Every structure is written in structure tokens, then in C-alpha cells.
Amino acid sequence: MDGVKAALVLFVASLLQLSVLTEYRLFRTASVVLVALLSVALLRGSIFGAVAGFMTGLLLDTATLGTLGITSLLLTLGGFWIGRYGETTARDRFHAPYVSVAVVTVLYLFGQLVLQFMLGEPAPAGLVLHGLPGALLLNLILTLPVYALIRRLFPPLELGDRIREVRLLG
Amino acid sequence: MGFLVLASLVLITVSFRSSALDGVQGTGATVLRPFEVAADRIARPFADTIGWFRGLVDAKNENKKLRAQNEALRRQLILDEGAIQENVQLRNALNYKGPPSIADFDKVHASVLSNSQGVLDESIVISAGKSDGVQPGSVVVEPIGGPDGTGALVGTVDRVTSHASRVTLLTDSESAVTATDVTNPQVIGAVRRGGGSSDVLILDRVPKKPFVRVGDTIVTAGSLGTGPLKSKFPRGVPIGTVSSKSSTDANLFQSIQLKPLVDFSSIQTVVVLVPKSTG
Image 1: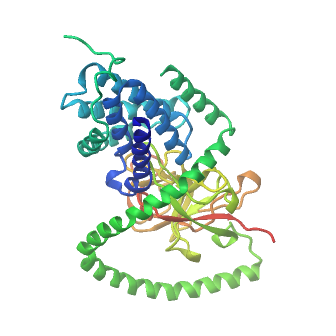
Image 2: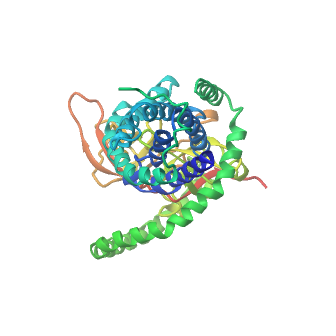
Image 3: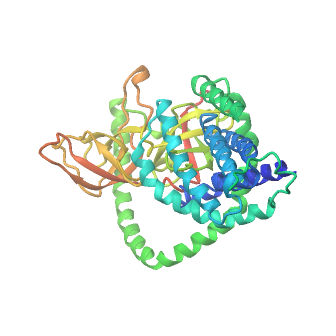
């Protein structure tokens, strides 16, 4: 059931990103998909986050006719890492979604840059540095409503469901 | 997790090195298209409302400015129409073979399915593809404002599927086009993205001698050429206006900045120039 809900949420977020947000110059650097994915990953764990990231990346690359796999790779790693962060230490902490979104926004942009560079495509670091503050700020602003909504859709797991997750003691 | 990373790497390799997945990707894009159109239609009234309020704030000032501009342009148009007629007559009399013009192309109107995504992306996806005659390299312009009912230069098509295409915008760091000054055709240079934001283009490689003025309109130069060297850009497609210029003793060329005529962040519809169909 969680899988279907996640698919729907991320599909709607992708449509919102592709068709609505990018029409506005102000929101062009924001990524509601990234924020939604990280929220889901934080609440449902690493494997769930990685699979959701892979599928969402595939959807975005298909819709934008970009090189397949680039966004999938970055979102898979982002989803897995933040899922792990949620499993081990941070799911219930207030700052967790904000820290996750801030860190992954930075890594995602530089990851894109590195992949483009490795593929021999133009990789202007100046553009990333120029766009980074805006992207960071907008994603953090989006985190508040998006995480609140996703937390309602994905309530905390019962203890039985969390049995396979890793938790740090102490 | 390892499997997903591996799958991503395989996808990158196959997608980047071959066109084996283009069909699948094209089908996927076609399947997604109705959803994107639906999302756009749902959001459109909200966007229009925001635009209406924004427009209201500037409307009075803009109205005054546009009335004055309209009057000046009306006078200019009368002069231009006379010059165009004379030009056509002289061309016919001399049997002149010039660079391709917009009239030499068929026009395919398309809507924008998705705008640029993120900081590094300077491309849009449009709703016209191979089935409409679009080819990689086809020139894309705005639908209004210029000669023949077409407007300023948007970019070129770099990837085509059966019903959709990806357009690399002029603001992409890999895009460049040979351009000239409308009022001084001796000025020839290459328009490309400036170092900073995508709001600024630069006209590069213009020697210091030809005189460029702030406010001049820069258009595509086009060129006759032969074979693969023939310019894909028709002559006379507007690109932007000169917003500033400077030169230093250390630099052989002028430093000319352009304000693009297209607002690349909010393109709704475009016209793709495709070769004229024979038949």
C-alpha cells in the first residue's frame, strides 16, 4: 500500500515539477520531486527510498528526453542515504527533513555536475555555485509543507515493520 | 541498492552511447504527455491569475510606453514595407541567391511540454517530433513578433522522438549562432551565453572596427555555404538587442552584451522551422 501511495505522490510531484513549477523563473531551481522523495525516504527507510528514487529518476529522464539513468542514479543514492539516516538516527527529530534536504540538494547539484563532466558534456561549476543558494532556500521552504503532507500520508511505522531497520543505540 | 546503481549505470551507458533506448524513451514521453498537458491545464487558471495581478501593477506605465513605441513602429513599418518591396524587385531582377530565409521553411507549431529543469539544464521539451517533420538541428523560434509571423530565436532541436523533441536553448553553454547587426551588416560575430545568468547573451568575436550601438537589434546572419557547412539558421531571425558594449586595449574584440528578446524561463509555444515538404 505504501508503494502505491509513494508512486502516486512522486508522480504528482514530478508532474508539478515538469509542467507547473518550471514555468516560473523563481521556482526553476527548486525541486519539489527531490523534497518529496527525501521525505518519503526519511519516513520509510533506505531500500524504499532507493527504489522510489530510481523510479522517479527514470520518470523525469523519460519526460525530459534526457540521458536515461543520470537522475535515477542521483536520486537512488539520495533516497538510500536519507533513508538510512532516518532508520539510524533521525526520523523523529524536528530538524531531520531540513538537514536531509539541505545536504542532498548540495550533493545532487554537484553530483549532476560531476556526471555531466564525466560524460564529456559542458559542466559549468559557476552556474551551480550561482544557482545553489536559490535552490537551497527554495527547497528548504518547500520542505515544510511537503514533509507535513507526506508525514500524514506515511504515518510512523509500527515496531513490527521496523524490525529490519538498523538503529543506533546510545 | 547495488542492483539499482548498476541498472542506472547501464542505462546511462546505453542511453549515452547509442540510440537503442530512444524508442522506449519516446513512447514513455508520449504516454506522459497527456498527464503533463492535464497538469498544465489545471495550473493555468492560477498562473493566469498571478500574471493578471502582476500585469495590473505595471499596466499604466507600460501602456504609456507602448503607445509611444507603437506610434514610432507604425512609421517605421511604412518605411520598411517600401524597402521590402524594393528589395524583392531588385532580387528578382538580379536573380539573386541569398542565404536561406524563414520563408524557405515550413513552420510546425508546438507547445512546450516541460521547461528547463534545474540549474544546469537549458533545454525544453516540445510536442512535435519526427512525425511532424522535425529533425535534429531544426531551428526553433518564438511564434510571434517577427517577420512571417515568427519571432525571436529560441534554440535548436537536439533530440527527436516520434511525437516530442528536446530543444537546446540558445542560453545553453554549447549553443552558438553566427549573428549580425541589423543596422550594420558588416558586424559579424557569434552569439553565445555569457558567463553569468541566462538573461545575458554575448556577441563574441566582433572586431573593434565595425560600429555597434547600444539598442541595435542583433539577428542571425545565416550563410550560403555548401553541403554540411550550409547554415541551418535562416538569415534575419531576431536574437536580442545590444545592452552594453566595451573594449580594452588588451582584447582584440569588442565585449558586447545582448538582452535576449525571448524570456527563456517561460516559453509556452514555439515554431519549429522544418525543410519544405516537396509535394
